[in-house]
Image 1 (cartoon, rainbow, N blue to C red):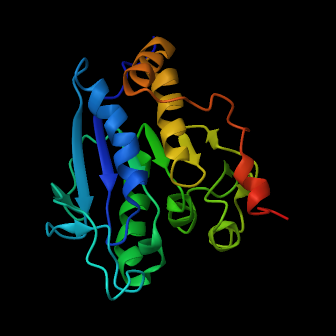
Image 2 (image 1 turned 90 degrees about the vertical axis):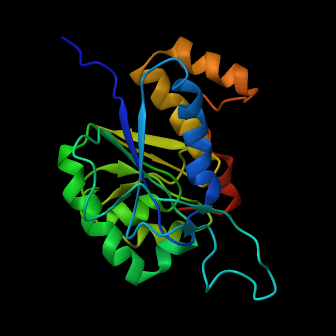
Length: 221
């Protein structure tokens, strides 16, 4: 007998996360939550606001970014998480921050039904060993750096998104939108995914191998 679709979602945040990696997929789930019972937990190293800005990437003359309030810390997560979303962004290069993120993901994964990554979020997960022996993809502009984090991963250079078991990984930034629509289509229904896409006026990439940016950035060359 098939399991009911998941209801409890979590998203990992850290300073310098890429906004669309998070807000793109979450807005699809926001719309889904109008019709189905869903809960969202926002996890970070503390309960302080987490900004899209990061000190070593932001221009010193800019004061531009968004902050999100976490609901839980990595040390006190909810016990009923079913789906975890891991974004990318320049903050993934901060080893001190990732030193808190990676152990949480590694500990959490065996309890999850699904693990989703967007952009260089897959590089973060790769460092935990979870992706060893599995197919995955990542941001094509940062391909060399991302794939170096997981030498035992079967990296797929030409892919908008990749599914291997209960792990879904996407290419860079906007590809997270296509990943989440594909996920909703498989886990809930294609009709639900199509309805949300039409309501959002979003033209989906339906072929996971349709990845023009692999050629643009010479990923895997």
